[in-house]
Each structure stands twice: as structure tokens, then as C-alpha cells.
Image (tube, rainbow, N blue to C red):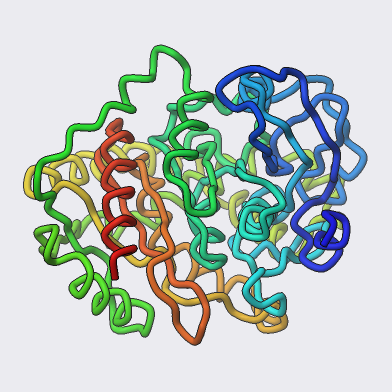
Length: 397
């Protein structure tokens, strides 16, 4: 099926447009879909919103320049939940991004188009952004690999912000960690490349965190012990402050920063926003400067707790999402309720800035279930190494 035909069925791209500037480099012959909150010179960047549906940037984002410089070929701009402010990818001028496993279900978001395009082999690599789980959530629901590096490693210059202090450029691939590493290396600044170094112990210790009584957790726990216990030490771990206060802290920071960026548009273009996006931004407008500053300060407490946890473990395992992909029709009737089930786990690793990755690990009712693996700050190389090890082990079962 041609790209245009696939796209008309699944809404993976808002704009299809080839960009290629170099036929040499680390990324030669690799195709990319770029989330439509990331600026592309001369090609419209809509952020999935009616407000920017005719916006054509005059420059590229840092990550776009890095990809083109290394020989990558960009196929187009992938679908995103409006301004990256949603986890369902149902509020977009490109229409709801549809799950390749079942097009009646959501892709997840907000980098849903990138995950869909990778799953359908429309591109080799999807580039997204992750502020509360927006790379890992759609990767989990669509059955691909989604990686959020340590916050701050990859410049966000030229990314339309959701939250300037939390936004992170992320990478989505179908099943190839080697390809993910290649892309990560190509878009990392030279002075940051030491984070790629991997030094795993012989038998890594994995800490179980955020598992509950829901069906997704039960299935994952059963398969973790069945598939991994011969190769890893598996223990339970708790981060009580992060568990209790992480969500509120992240949401206070991100929504305050989002509403600050959008304050003029909220006044001038209120009728152009999708309802769920507008509701979140109005919530952000109610956050006081004192509450915002307190959240920034408390974030440091959560980071300290997170760092200390790694005295006893090497990595943290969690369900990426609490549910599998719901039907689009159900989400449209109550988008904010489903948002809670989707972002509750992923957002905790955003507030501490940790490297975190979702991999396909199981299925429930024939729908993908993702396992999230999170690591120490600035030890992204270790995280990718253990992820490859886990995927190899799972492949033997």
C-alpha cells in the first residue's frame, strides 16, 4: 500500500513532504517521521492545531538539522495531539491517529503519528517529544520501542514547547536497538556522548515499581518472572515521595509553563483550540507563581529520592500504561479520564528527568502491552544496553 493510502487510513502524518540534504553520514538511507511540533524550514508545522494550520517556519529545529546533516531522509510531519498536550492523539487537525493493530483504537500520544508510522513501516524512525510520556505511551499501545533520553541531553531548540523544563526529544523504532543507538549518537551533542557508555554488572538487579491490581500489571508481572528471573535479580522497590507527589509536581510545572506560552492565544484564539487542550490550559492559568516555584523546589526532593534508589537496584521496571489502547469512540466521550490511565506511570520519570524506554513485552486481548524500563540519570547507555539484553532474552521464549 502506498504512503498516501496508508496515511488516509491511519492518519500517521499531517503533512507528507520529502526532505533530504546530504547523501552521506551516520544516518544515510534511514527514513524519518518528524512530530509536527518540531520546526521544519519551509514546511508547515501545525502542532496539530487550527491556530497554526498555515504556519511555515523559517528555520529547522536542532534535531532536524542534525538528522539531515548525517544523511537522514525525512518523509514528513507526523500527527500529534494538539500542541502535544494529550496522551490520546484524538485532538488534531490531522484527525485521530489510528492504532495499526486495530484502527478503531487510539494510537496513544502525543507522538502518536510517529509510533503509527514506524509500526506500519512508513518510516524507519519516528522522532517525537516526551513531557509526560508522549513517546513511550504510543509506543506501548502500538507495539514498538519508544525511548526518552535523560532530560536536557538533546537540545529542544526549534520545538514548540509544552513545558520548557520537561520537554525531551525522543526516538521511536520498530524493534532495532542498534538503529535507536545510531540515531541517538547522531543527534547527541559531542560533549554529551559520554552518556552512551555502558557498564552493566553481570547480573543486573531490576526493581519492580508501580504495579497494581489491574490486568495489565498482572500479565506483565507473570511474564517478567517467567522470562527474566533466570537472568536478572528481581526485587520490589518503592519511591514513596515520587509515587505520592510526582504527578502533582509534574502537572503543576508543565501546565504553568504551557499556559504561560499560550497566554496570548488563549485570549485571542480560544475558539480554535480543541476542548480538552483548552481545558488543560485554563487549569494552567489558575496555577499561582508560588505554587509553580514550590513545585520546582519539590522536584529536587523527588530527584534526590530517585538517585538514592539506585544504591540497591540497577533499573526500574513498570507498566508503561495502566490499560491497553481503548477505542477512539470511547476516548472522544471522555478524553481526560483516559488520559489519567495513560500518563500515570510515565510522567513520574519525566519529573525526575530519568532516561526511560518502553518495549513491547506482552499482549492483552491481542493488543500490545508495553514494559517500561527506567535508569539512572545520564546513564542512557546502560539503559539501552539492558534493554537490548532483555529483548534478546524475551526473544528466546
